[in-house]
View 1 (tube, one colour):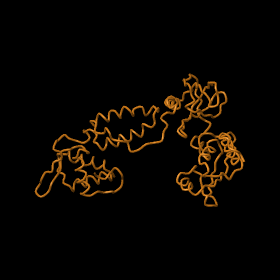
View 2 (cartoon, rainbow, N blue to C red):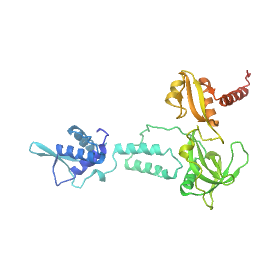
View 3 (spheres, helix red, strand yellow):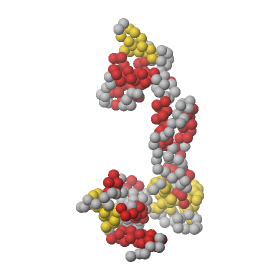
View 4 (cartoon, rainbow, N blue to C red):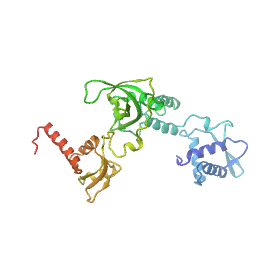
Length: 338
């Protein structure tokens, strides 16, 4: 199969030449046409030679390409190339198998964004691709997968919230807190959707307190559009809002602190290749990592998730918070607390 670099540019250039009955194109002419097209499209002189053009022609003739019928016409000792059909063009042909396979993988990737209104066309296009390909792609297994929770509640609200944010609409939100038994009603002005730990959250303000808050989508019971003026976001820049925290919780009056942890040797390579946070740095000792973060619930949970693989050294307040959680866990298992 031809190299993928600039392949589509070359195919279009060859198609233009092969469909032109007003001129004879020999292999040298086709090479020049391909290289000129690459230069025009990319601004770079990444030229190809005869061998590549021969491979391109062979691919265009194949079933994986367009099954194009290309004539090799003798002109003395030379050969020029053209389509057998005067009116043929790959632009008028159905998608070839390679294109269909590539598009199917893109569709598969985008389909992870279920619930978003701009991706509602995904399933429709997938079905059309199967029809166009005459079932050639049936049975093709996907080669990429993403972590997701297919049983997560609340994803059905993403479309409504996305539209409300995009169109500046206020909402009536009925919400059941995690630790509550009663459903609460809010006049809510949504600003931002964020996913963390496979759970979706929406950020905005409620008219009762007029300060930024967030709702977990899986706790939302009902959303209705309100016919009241929308309060635009003049409170926070979300590109910076999450910079100094892990997760979605920004404690009131929270301050950035230097977090210091020691890490067991077996775990250290994993944390180096997958940092806990962008501020992660090596400490004075080889087994020590430091971070610049605001302490919140998600940070404590993340640290506890590594079990005996890490030990929190600083600050004292975080050490105490982690120790308290560990003691509470011991009580659950009826273990003696030292």
